[in-house]
Length: 260
Length: 359
Image (cartoon, rainbow over the protein chains, first blue to last red):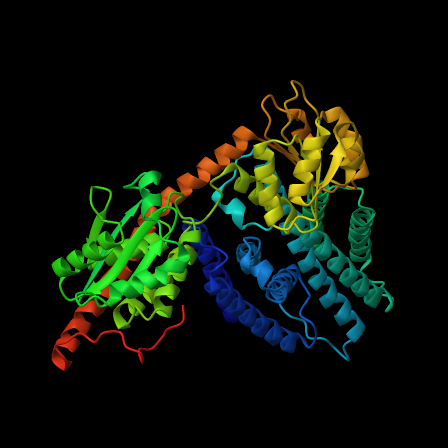
């Protein structure tokens, strides 16, 4: 199976990236429908590629780090497209293309792992577990972006050095709300995913199970802290972006260990 | 046909002269109608704002057109004489109008109020049937140009006054201000102006505390807010989102030590402190607290200046856009002149059945 559709998708996100940079330089971001079209084209190509890979595997194509990265990019693009005009039109939205482009470049650099076609009937609960968990990771990725954006915005406010792009970011209040909402969405999806996986008594992936529970606990703690309103938007932003970094490193480490 | 523009503005005339020539909104249509009825003038629109009075007319002969304008205005005791008046002919007149509606000729660069004022003036002229094909086309195009300049450049971006800078920062912190509570400490002119700007954005409530309680009551009444005794202002403070400090106190009225416990009670809601007082009312140390954003008069003024610089930097892009439209309009004007000369040598005056275009 070749990577043509994936390469086209990456190219579309590169175009979205370039358009974002151009819009930033021209200081007219938020009004560029071309970024939306580039993301949509990239998303369609991703979907085509994932569909073909799923057909070839006979199940949800989540069998390697390569697949996880592509699926993660797909879920980030999906959330971007579903998030609504306010999110897309803000500067926060234009970070989606660069993020997906970078993640997909990493995926493209990795060797394409051979697919082992599923033997026998596919366990739909396990498929659900894998797919929903990765979409949850997409929500966590966007929560991380919202967190970083909030920190950048806040730093400008605190230091009183306002760049021209300051006026295009959502407000601190909206960023904090987006951060909170995305963490809650991601946590709910992750809980559903874990329930679906554990209800089938998946015993052969011990390390992954430990990591999954660890990630769930990390975000459970974050949700509890956000719900109690005892942490400031500033700290919540640090936690959301830090948690996603931990998540990425952990997924990568698990893949590495499982190969050994 | 030629387009003439005769007028004076804040660039050419002091306020004493501008107020002599100012025309009330109710008389714009009547004067437009009088001008358009003159045999040497075809159509007319009169624009009058606090910063400019301008007459736009269409005429087959520029020299006779200027003479006619001069005669009519002199009859009304408004003889357009002296250096304060400028004259613009066709291409220059078109360019001038496009610049005016885009806010490039305004006292505050990039302000948008002028567009509404010119629209009203045009509607008055339309209402008195003083416009026809030429000026309808010109003004409709001008409104489109203004819209394009606003959306494709940053000429209206940022705040160019201390009050509007404070409002914009508040919106960058809280988003919509409709849920925000404001407290004014010290009933000064600057704090009233700033609170007024916040009120215009729909803040939920305003508390006023002043050493002289009568003044606090008076300001609270004017703003539809609630007066609070100065000794008791900290009681209401936990509910406040935006604090405006403007007292004459020689020391800090709000310190970090006072604020720390309040922030804990506020359950991490941000607090925006606007310190307009000199000496300052709010200890600069409070800015280090999580969720507290402090701006003093100098930092707000710096933001206003920065925005003005950004707007100035956009001028080249605005002028380029305008120039493109001036070229297109004058091309249309030439084509129209050729068409008219082929169809009928006599200019069609505005008539009862002339189409009335919406603004």
